[in-house]
Image (cartoon, rainbow, N blue to C red; front, side):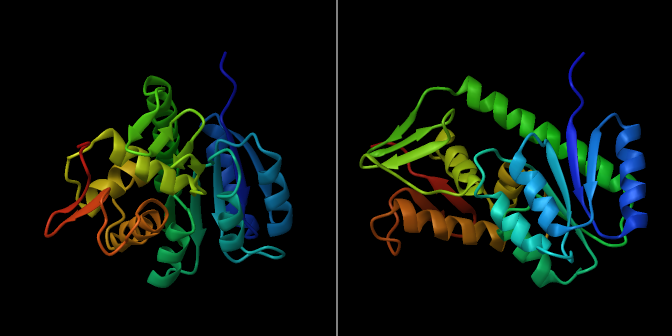
Length: 235
């Protein structure tokens, strides 16, 4: 029998935490809960988690800081932020710091369960794709290793966030194809984050700073005005 998927909940509202634990355990997940941000970070850093359900307003270390730190870890853990901070600014900031989804409070527990399942399916699919596309992708002096999740340019390793790697890897697997921002949100982020398409712009701008010689005239990630972006086909 396969081991249960492990979910870490970092939530200081006891009633919400109890409800989430009850329903997630009913779904067969192995659930651990802490109400303290500092303890949540220590547990996350220890590793072994399949998903993180994260509140923003926490004692100790706040949720945005945990999210930011999580994306420095070697293993990618899907993150769903749940917060009473429902403003657009906090949603965008959470997504840009590396969260995979954002549910404002109050939310439906059934909706959260559905999104956890979707994130785990996406995580499994990314792992399968990496294994099936085990060979390096090469574009000029840019080399992408999907198994090691490394990118080098001119022989020098680049420091990419996990989301930047996923975005670049997706582009490189589909050279010449044009993708809208919503396409990229769906394929790389795993959700249609309506209203947050400029999150894609932010990540593309950051990628261009790392892989383009001249960001004013990019040669790899190209803008197709009125349609989206594409990765340049090999000459």
